[in-house]
Length: 296
Image (tube, rainbow, N blue to C red; front, side, top):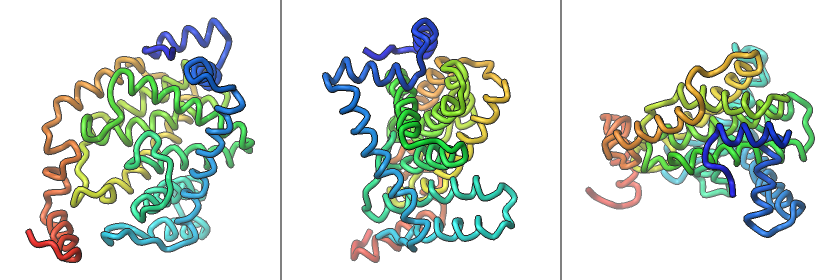
């Protein structure tokens, strides 16, 4: 059974001289009864879907049924190729891929809800883009997904991955933490460094509310996927430089859960607070209802 604390995971990986990726696979073999090969192939299918959803919006002008989002991923992709950006083509590509997944999700396309549908763009954008930069193989990207999964298990065991329960900090925050840890291991970092990265990401997004306009996972969710991807990638570099989190991973996860429980229900995916109840947000919701022929 997978351990329930980050410190325990670090200790086990140190004693067994293994990565979070290898530990996650080992636990999955034990719990599922499947062979290592079968488990890896299942993850390969996830990666394939992630690649498709991360790519589609870069070449197609999508539009959600509500009309709230769509077409932004291709704009970013084209902009990144001009050479005029401040952050460079690498970061623009990651941002565009995060948006692409969100747009595919909003148009009822196929995505991998990792860890949730609302945060589906972060892990694909981070792992695929970092993998390209680092010249990693497909098998190495699959390993990174197992690392991300291991960190996600720890968060799920000790807090929540649900925006309805813990706010967007639990969705986009967890996804970004998972992605950061995965990239750190991909770059040769230790399990301790990977969880340091995850801790820093969570600290930086602590308290983020979940306030979807019209109750749809589109605005502001899609752009929060961009922010999560950027946070994961920049934090991976921060960690690889030797910077550590003064507050350990386990403590940050506990804090995230407590903060989530303290958030009023209006700020936990009910569309009853935050951006959803701004004049513009309410007008958007009303327009969607009118389009559907539903009166208030």
